[in-house]
Amino acid sequence: MEDVDIARNTKLEKIQNIAESIGITEDDLELYGKYKAKINLKIMDKLKDKKDGKLVLVTAINPTPLGEGKTTMAIGLADGLKKIGEKPVLALREPSLGPVFGIKGGATGGGHSQIAPMEDINLHFTGDIHAITSANNLLSAMIDNHIYFGNELGFDRVTWKRCVDLNDRQLRKVETGLSGEKKIVPREDGFDISVASEIMAIFCLATDIKDLKRRIGNIIVGYTKENKPITARDLKADGALTVLLKDAINPNLVQTLEKTPAIVHGGPFANIAHGCNSIIATKLALKLGDYVITEAGFGADLGAEKFLDIKCRKAEIKPNAVVCVATIKALKYHGGMPKEEIQNESIEALNRGFNNLLRHVDNLKNKYGLNVIVAINKYTQDTENEIEFLRNKLKEQGIDLSLVESWEKGGEGATDLAEKIVELTKKDSKLNYMYDLNESLKEKINDVATKVYGAEGVEFSAEAEEQIHKIEELGYGNLPVCIAKTQYSFSDDQKNLECLEPFKIHVNEIILKSGAEFVVAITGKIMTMPGLPRVPAAENIDLDENGNIIGIF
Image 1 (cartoon, rainbow, N blue to C red):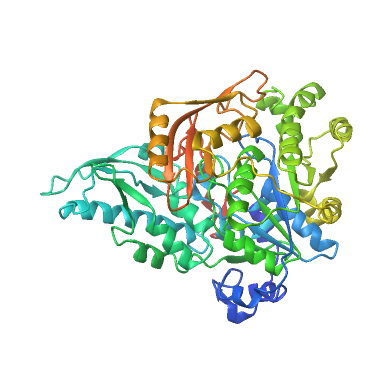
Image 2 (cartoon, rainbow, N blue to C red):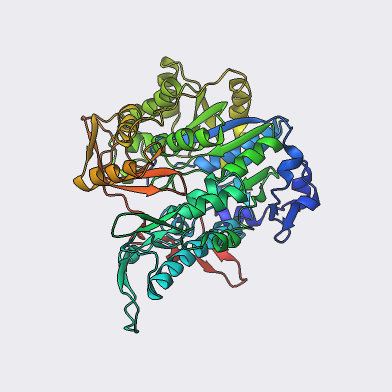
């Protein structure tokens, strides 16, 4: 049975009842039909003196192209906690249409561990990403309009790109203004996917609507001939962009198939952005639940690093426990086994791939100083020999393991993990950042590359060196760094799965995100506008004869 069929055959609770279960009244809700609602941010005033719950981060090893079920695990854990009598709240990212119609599929979990209504969340949901796209492109329109009417601010170079929430490699570089109209100024432009837009990053890092407007105003959109920055505030665009986002900034409330509350809000990718749901949603969830389960995108080298070094630092929060998700197929994949063969048993490949898991756990436990447990997302083809081998290997390292079957059994398949998390969160936790903000940008990038990725060092292109010099000269050298890197490897080469030989990270470009308040380092062959695969998921998505959506996974 497809995920969409499982979701469709499950009777959901009215969203008002889900809200009531965590102390949200109907006055605090803006309803979007029977099963979706936005939570008015004014509720934070009522909750400000309430003690925060415990924060659990779900991260993973480096994935295979289809992912390792991190969202399924997070949902299963929340349902498992509810099953053993605890009061959990999920805090997850919103899916982008890019993966839904591309290769990876949706981001609402799978099997019996899903958030619902699945089709709505995976498609247009409550319109948040569309609002971000519109705000981004209004800013582009205002830039070109300003230039058309005389360029009073003196744009010599425009750095702001347009965006669309789809994978479309054809739009990476475009020429605009080719209509030939009098006074129109043709120029080179490009598109990012919406979830890589700085507006999305700002949306997820802002603490309230006032902070959102301040950050939008600080966006640098271009430079004069004298290299003086021009901001969105200079264009008088910050007010209108904030208006477009005034409803979107309210977090969305939905539910799991087992009626566990889920706050789903914001959705930057972790390989090309910072990979975490909004600070607003996480902080709200911490006031509403005794346990908050959140996730960070892709492997721990990307999502967890940015969650800890960017989001936690900004929000002044830290996880009480971390779940590192692995699958046996991904471990064999990172042990050099061809992806078309990873369904077959291979202790040898599993042993080689175990190094990937061990490095992630070592980073989380010994470098960041966090409480860690490994969760194996069990697949039907996993053999008892492989499971037992992995259990023994982890035991040798003093690492606890939980075998999770939430895809097949829902919360019941994650009660062992839930019970272990309850115990793990009782331990003291600390959080060591991987760099000091007062270090230079090059030092910060080098710290992440050497400490987290295990690289020998970093090679910067001449262009990146010059960009770093200019950014530090403008006074932005004390910002955190967000490294855009492949999700498939600790290195910046997606084919280097095992990373057995010494490697360096290659930084090609440095981009200042003055509104988001971090600096992006583009490494390897990473793109901020993905392309579709040879056979995109879109080819199999359709409506059946009854008008039901089919093919979304």
